[in-house]
Length: 371
Image (tube, rainbow, N blue to C red):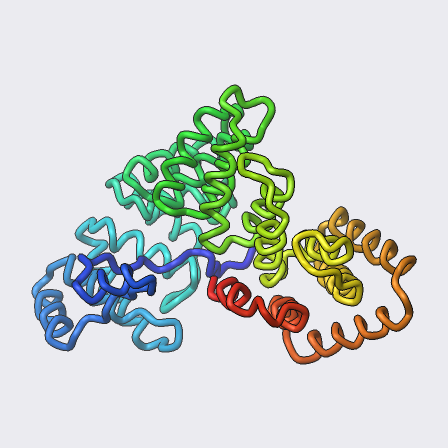
């Protein structure tokens, strides 16, 4: 592993939402925290110079930025002063900068030491990053069992990503025995905090035959929430719910619409499914040329993946269509695909091709792009 690891993220500024932020959220728009104004920064500078660790921490956060080494070095200077006073948030942030090699020489071992010091003091972000370090063996010996302990502690404080990781640990038996009850409990906490990956994982748990609480309706509920949040995997799985009538009334049109949304994001399985629907005119008009173009696009994307089963599915789909598609349709499909690939990078090529095939469905595709 590289000595600098950008998987560690800088702390997000948490502040009480103002009226503009609330109205933006109600209007369906993301509300980003405002940058501190000059007067606030001046106050932090004054209080930091007087030795306030919280001010030193806030000032450091205002200075950090990936594109300005001088500001990052200044941030490290203030964080070191706060760390001397055992300021937990500063310990965590300095650890992140050391893990990333940002404003200071990368030092994974020291980063983990700082994570642990802040984690012991109860900092949930530090507990989460310490747990991830223990999973990856970053700056320390890998220890999934101890990692689960820290995920649980952070999750108990409401840390959504830690709740998800704890749930997945119980689901896969990483650092513990597999326990579907515990997995569902932790994933539900994260799902209720609107983590779309947790929603999908929780939905899948309700489909498992070894789950005594298996329920198609509960599975549909959580998978649909993840799909509506924009997760392409969930959108494809939701299309299968509608196709099979599992937990919801069978609806080929809805199955097609959700598969198109997933395919527009580059989901290979969804592209193959839409290709089949075009061929059979299920939930859409028949379009054999479009079916071939999507199958070829799925094969093109599958070749770039390391999943052999997906590649085999794409190859079989192309072989099926090659045997039944006229040369004129096949030639038109190749031209459409070449235009999409030449002009766009994946997954934009997927959305472009689907827009070409579905001129009346631009609104749905544009919604998928906004994810």
